Image (cartoon, rainbow, N blue to C red):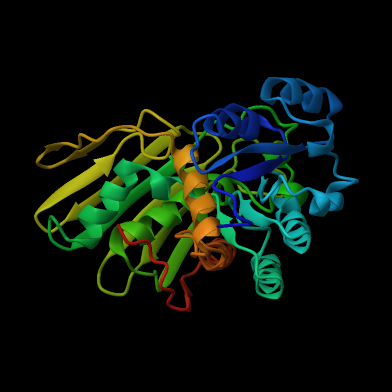
Length: 345
């Protein structure tokens, strides 16, 4: 057990919509962990959630005094829910403070930052997990099982579409200095993930093109949309699209003797699955609660997360290759090292 504890304390770093609307409610359902601290630059939010969750004043932090979290024994895990430009800095600072880390996707702004996080993991010996919640969703895990188990024969083609209407211009996701990119970094990463966990294989080639911008002033320095194809070296392809000006939510696999799909596929709830043989009938879950409980158990039992840092680095290397392909308007060969973490169902 971690310091003899049966349940671990989690501090949320960043109190935006995802933290307050998804992670906080999930932490009311978790069995292996609970909300133990908050980090925010907004004192009003700190006071609001301090009261709701009965937190002590010494468990509330600002970004200025964040490093003093090292002295708080109630906090075991830090969940980074910040703009992408802050992921590497706060992941590393948390681990140097002796805290285990869950980091929202993408892992960081680029490959170099991901590698710095992994260096910190190795130096500190702390546990690290990506916030890849879909690995804990039963319908997504069924897609893994059907694909990797070749239930309908070998998968031949994947259609993976994850897009959303981004909304107003003045948000950090549309600031390339804070986001590192557009919908590929935010939504498209789910398509990359799905292609790998359905096939159990790594792509060898990518071929991408940026979509034409309908609002250049809104999408300055980042893509409005992008389409790309991933090739898996054995005639298996994944056709993907991610956009900030469409609504798409599809994960479909066409195999030798049938098909299987989720639509919607990437949401927090309300997912629906079907196959060429009928509906997928699986009990819905709270993805975030299962994700955090699993990581807490990994820390307690000293086991590696099923969504480790190496997976985040792998995905960032693929994202970098997709951007390079779109910029050069040509295919790019991928040389991604084989990892054990290919998402077994």
